[in-house]
Image (cartoon, rainbow over all chains, first blue to last red; front, side, top):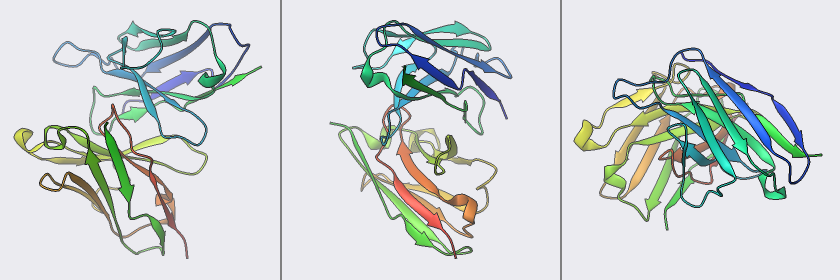
Length: 113
Length: 114
């Protein structure tokens, strides 16, 4: 299975400040069709996961533009330009290039300092 | 509005069975590959399995911990996804989500305990 490793696992951030989460995969996530299948999800406390980013850098509908994704191959990053209170929760990366199974990172818990 | 509504969770003894359902609305269900993802209490997300749309063969794939015990099926006439869980183990205790990956249901809690 492809192992997804996130860092940090805990991320205290001051409101209005930027935040960055790293995700590394044990294999390249470039699929045979040329696309890179790396997604980011947000899970707010008590809620279901919500996809924010797909194929590395594409924002889902309704996702604020303060969220951005970047990276290639095995190294990826989710950035929040200015953290707001509603961004508190756990963030997961997920690979969809090698199946079965799709695999998630361990999760990064973002909290407000 | 896209909606995925899971049901069928509850308390079951080890070795028992449960069938989860996921009612979909607001999108073309028959055109989507559908998945189940679970989350044990206080833990991260774990992929359970996936079923392709019929035009792509309708085949299923499962994660190793559930292979041979769980079965995913779909009824496109009812816009409903199913997860048949047999030979349940305490480790199967989790919230089970139905998902297209882009959209997620609210989840249904399965507790396996004697």
